[in-house]
Image (cartoon, rainbow, N blue to C red; front, side, top):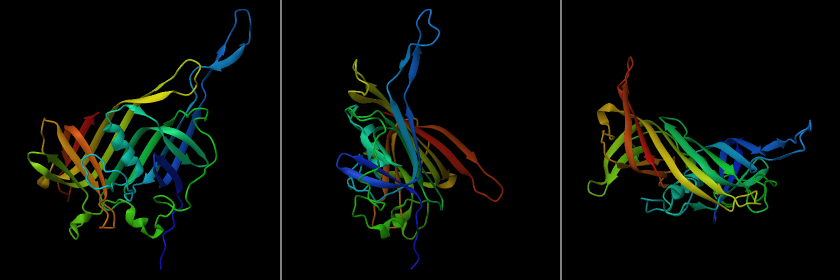
Length: 305
């Protein structure tokens, strides 16, 4: 029996009671300790270097788009299965009525920290594996450093928790494979509306790029190096898709619309990963055609939270 070996780095994310280890293709960690020299009149050298800003770090990584996570149902989805823990986290932040956040635990490459999501994105294209990326700011928590400790508590395998079925890893990776048998493997984008129905305009996707970025503000008290709390201020979201101009589901409309994307894997029993973009507007449309090719349209949708 043939086996597939992954030589990727595990990144563990813990959000509340949920924990998932992702297959990361790379991981970058940076740490900043801003200092400024202070000079005295008549003295050549500074009397010392003192903090110019709070210590902070950041961690970013790219990972294969996992769709096997089981979490609370996201907005607009009744089922509790919707992809990976980063997708779950991004959805809850952008749809939360409360701006205050406690941060999540991020572990990678022998270090760990309490992070706040800065950005999340994924791409999918015809006959290719979908990849995602995420970045966090590490402010620290209490007396803990923003980046501290050794890697601990990470399962040897890659998947959900410690009892993941490793034989199903490959079927739980989203891809851009399109086929009409069965249709559950289709990667689609569609509009949804209470009056017109849940799916009234479905687009045929050749490729799609999704991204969302968050702005957050840490709150410091005098004498504190680590923030007392952190607030998410706003978020901006975008989708760029390429469609067949003859079978387009994204007709131009100047009104706000809700759009949904579903990414599938090889396991048809899994519902796949679901992303809903609410009150989005189409900001640009273009078309291109080449020799021995069909016309395809590129469309950009944006939303703000």
